[in-house]
Length: 575
Image (tube, rainbow, N blue to C red; front, top):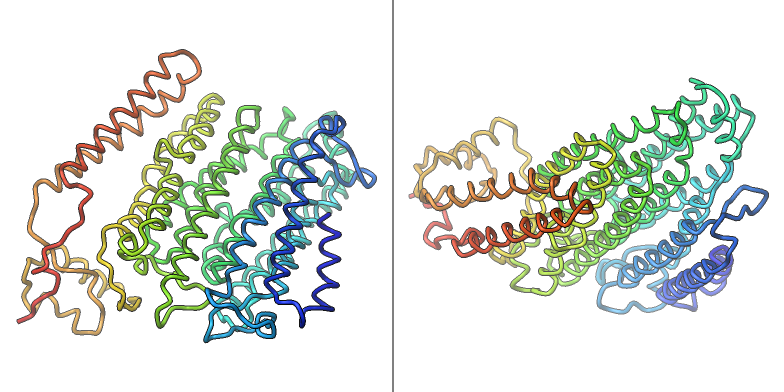
């Protein structure tokens, strides 16, 4: 159905793009994806699907899990295209302008007729990839969806940042595709087989072969590159930050679903007793993704780069579930993938909505919300959007009783049952630490003062000057001497207001926060390990939630979450 839709859209855009507004092509694509999802859902009732059906001479294999993921991909694709239907802003463009591939600077980002067509190509490649059961069909499916997302990244040609990001995406994506092709060629050269089933049978009946193992690891490295897992993640922050926000929503969600599910299907090699390098590679990449995604996100002041490092951290959880590879971990993997995808899409929907509402001078038409500081005080102006974003970020941080908490709980439960206690400990630790940058965004939205005339500036000073500014912030009193603010005379913007009066209550509340974080760190694994063994685990979980709730209420009553400032100290007096 998707292939039929691609062919129809090519003809329709070629023949009627001057008469039909581009927004109509986007809506037709959404309807097409919803109908495809309905067809895939109906195919689940076919009895033969349960055991798997090979099609096109064994190049593809249709199973229950592939059809279920197809339904999810189609629904998510339709949801993301709903976002692009608003790319033109609040005003409706005339038909002769809405089909243009250029940007109408007076009315905002134009709607492109080619966007839904390229998105359909990408969906077709994803659907083919998760059903692939041969090296040939695997590589062709990867290239089909990869070239589609390369074009999507550069579809707005007048954006210099999008063009640079798309070029970087193309070059490094081509490198990962070359690694996959190299591994596939070596695997075929050493075995003479391209079918996954034949490869599994051959490897299960022979002793360990280093050449075959290296070939499979090359393919795996290329796949990890595609999902931006550490240490192959360096391209992701620049690419996702450079492309328009509407396109970023597609790039951060859709390709990862297909590649991660394909890795799940490709894991037949890990079932062999003499194959351990695959599992070790996944575990190492999971550990590095958890650490890099958490530590890298703490230093970000651009919202899309922060969300990129957040994605890298969550990929670490998904790879941990894939490395375990048992029935329990597969369930946790699918649940985590679905809940995180929906939460991530919701975050980008809210960012785009904030961009529509903040139509002030100086904002980029491609990515109106670029910096975290642009969201200052938006809870007062848009309480519903601010609350929705806070809920989504709390879910990403794993705060109960939101769905993100249960996703991490299932993965950690599978890890502890499999004996991966160290990785489970690291995952809990980074979850606590990563909550810092989620809470920073929530603090900016809900507690910082709203300043509609504020312009965003970046500090590009030298390291020495930055250190002096930080030292000044730590040592200055309410009314600092003019000597202490001398670095400001160089033209650099201060990091913030001067230090306020010393407050013992602040440090007491900070100690309470540390105590509750340690309680989360040590009580949570114990509760998870006992959750399904006896009723004792259930009551420990209830006790854990009660203690957390009491602590939160106490901290709230003590004013720990009130970020207020004395108006008299809001400006630095140099006289």
